[in-house]
Length: 170
Image 1 (cartoon, one colour):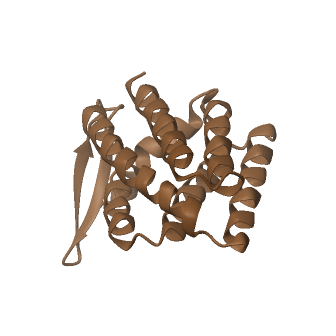
Image 2: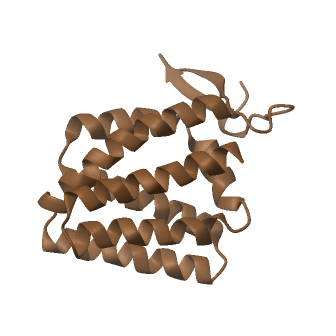
């Protein structure tokens, strides 16, 4: 059986192949750009909710962790390390979800994000994209950490994911 994580996208270079494990058997399906946009629109609502809740619920230690991730993201961009940046980007979103303590949203987002892995890496490798999204991520961190403002945190996440949608379409 072919490794589904390395399946060739062939003529569907803007599509993504998703490997889903069902009863020990991998099923691979293509996630089109339109589907990726629709999934990201759903993420926008759920991640906005999580950011708003994290702004209120996160401990001081957790807020320091967000700041540290932001610092590492800034270094990764400065050092020209897009894959490191992509990993940190993912980690930031995971931490915000965890700090929200909104279990249902976390589970839904895990399912949605599993379908976007290829698109995530494609965006990370797009010239200029990490630099662009870095400021959006730092704004998210600032709204959660310094301001502890749920509305600003949700707005920052929505602005970031709107930018992701624009990049997916571009």
